[in-house]
Image: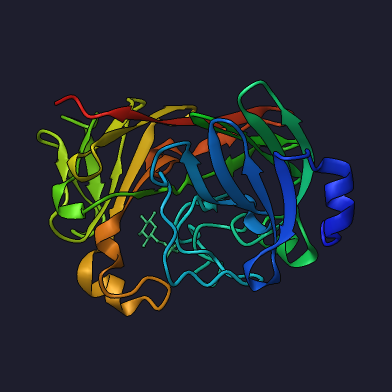
Length: 304
Ligand code: BG6
């Protein structure tokens, strides 16, 4: 189905009072979700979630105040889907960073109202140009379950006759009160590749605290992460499956100021903790096989 027709989308997939299709910022179609437990927004281009807040909570997901939401552009903030490679393409320097999914065309394939949550499923439609960048028969689907918790199941189905090799991440920007005061638990003693220090391999001592530009791939970890934010009096829990790598990224002041879609002080209100298949955790999917990258985000009160 052609996803450009808002009234057709509402007729086929709208759910009264719960799922509404709108023409959003930059003329891009978006899905507004409201139920008893949360509010959320997904831009159909990129299957890009730009907002999720459990009822009574500040948004859990950060969107840059200067995000450029426009056709074929990557959105700064929300949950970009990096696929089928993470970061720069391994061999083609001119291929887009983080792959083709985050700026790609997606179609809605299902919406469902459950008792206290809403499910929305989308599928990537590859255009000819994207086929040049990823010439493999593959189906990529993203299933969102939105309620008091947010679950995302990113499913790669190798429908071809040969094995495929992918890197990927749910590049989630968390909304925090102040980067100087948050910490991330769950990665203690893990080894990481420090991308701001020539990708040297280092070992994490204690919780992760950020006080400078940080760009790390934590390896061999499927642990839950817990972002503790005393300023917002809450902890955000990240559970995951199908992922043995976690990326932690904050560009810090200078790089943030240099990014038009970020701005001078924006870095202090965001932290990316990305559930990934990156570095030695990239995956080979055999012909006919399916790989699930699954996450669940939830908010807990701070233990005083
Ligand atoms: C992170 C990478 O995941 O994404 C960083 O580890 C990168 O190296 C960052 O700078 C942002 O990437 P982009 O392409 O959205 O600017």
